[in-house]
Length: 66
Image 1: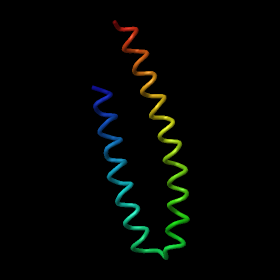
Image 2: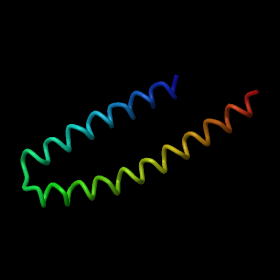
Image 3: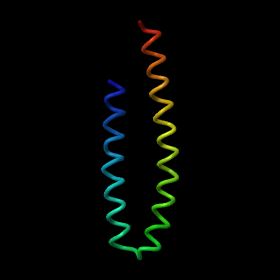
Image 4: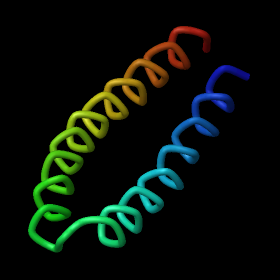
């Protein structure tokens, strides 16, 4: 159940990500939007690392439960 909730949260992050990109290009100059997207990309990289850790922990727990 918790993994399903977590998946739903990650899905909403993806939706929000797309909305942010559209808003940045609509409201800022291309140069400023690119600077903000660079920061967003760095944060996304950290989020990916955390996701990988979650998957590893989930697999470890699953193996222990078998």
